[in-house]
Each structure stands twice: as structure tokens, then as C-alpha cells.
Length: 255
Figure 1 (cartoon, rainbow, N blue to C red):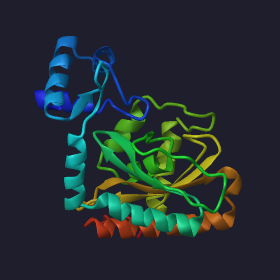
Figure 2 (cartoon, rainbow, N blue to C red; figure 1 turned 90 degrees about the vertical axis):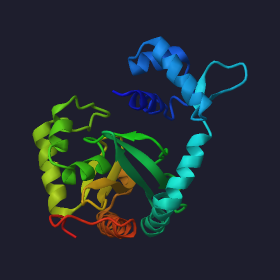
Figure 3 (cartoon, helix red, strand yellow; figure 1 turned 45 degrees about the vertical axis):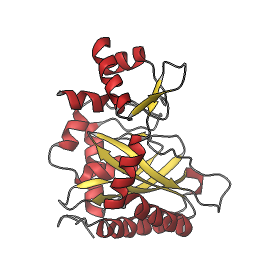
Figure 4 (tube, one colour; figure 1 turned 135 degrees about the vertical axis):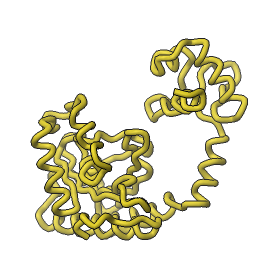
């Protein structure tokens, strides 16, 4: 990796479970030597990409990232547009909706929305890393990903998140075939126990998916009627979002 790539990879180590990290933890997670990590974090801090609290050695993400995020949103208002779509999905289905983006081989939740219709709902976190093989969003992405991407994922270690997580590559390929046929992927208890999710891919200008739009509900509430409603709404909403961000569905997508 080049110097810039190495520095950016350090920023990618931060997550909801690692909002602040010290030099030793960054060194361990990155696999770089301590002197290199210290030098890069110092440069990132000088540029405003990370910061340290007074008297605290731990690093956290800095305010410069907020400025760049605002500029990105001004140029391509993906976040604001997706939130409109998610609110609609919540209102219509009465369940939790969320959007995820793929970058550097990881699928991460960008934003989510809750419905006020039920006291019990599926909880989400923004910036949560989703499993490709164990979530509806991940399967929806894999089904229409660039050639070879799904094979690469299925050839690697497949974590068993719950007793219901499918880890057999052949069965997962069958699930991807079904998603290609219908345009929608489905997961029941694969990532979180008792959660039933449906998802559809969101495509970019190059007809390659950039992420997925999903609705997640408790298994106990997933009646045939609700399932039919969610499948129709999540697919039409994903198509609408693809169009609004300037994307195009591939000819093979059953739109």
C-alpha cells in the first residue's frame, strides 16, 4: 500500500465499537509498526482528520471529515435522498428500513429509519458493518455484483452469526440465483436471531450495485401479507432511488 492508502486504512479502523483508539490498538489492528502508525496519525491529526482530547492519548475522528462529508452530500445528495425513501418505506410497511453502501469490500449501513407503528422493532446502527452472506442486503448486493466478487466472498471464511446463518457456499449460490430471478434477496435470522429482512440492490451509473435498500422486521410479525407488501415496496423504492442518484439497472435485473 502507498502512504496515502495506509493512512486512510487507519481511519477505516474506527467504528461504533471503536469510537476512540490508542496508538497500541491502532498498531495491532493495522498490522503496521508503531513508529509508522504514530507518524501517520500525527499527520492526520495536523490535517484535522483525527483529534485527541486534552490529556487523553486516544484518537477519535476529527472535524475535517464532517466538512468533506458535507461537500460530498452537496455534490451527490445520496444521504438526503435515501432518507426520504427510507421514511416512505417505514410509513408503508411499519418496519425498520435501512440503506447500505459497499466500499473496499465491506458493506456498511449508511442510514436507517424507524416506524412508530410498533413498540418492538429491529434496531439498527449507522456505520454498522453487515455480513455479505448472512444479510438480505449482502445477498442482494452479491447477486448483482461485478463478476467474481461473489465467488471471492463465498470462497473466504463465512462467519456463523447465529444458529440460522447459512454458510454452505452451494446453498448461498442458490439464494443468489433466486435473488437474480426476483430482484430481491431474503434472510431469516442469518445476522441477528429472529430478524427477517428483504433487500434490493441500488445501482450506480455503471450498472454495478453500490449498496442495497432493505426492510427488517421481527420474524413473529412477518405474515404472508406483510411479506408481499415489503417485497413490492423495497423493490420499487430501490428502483426509484437508483434513478434519483443517476444510476441504471442492468438489463438482467427483473425490474
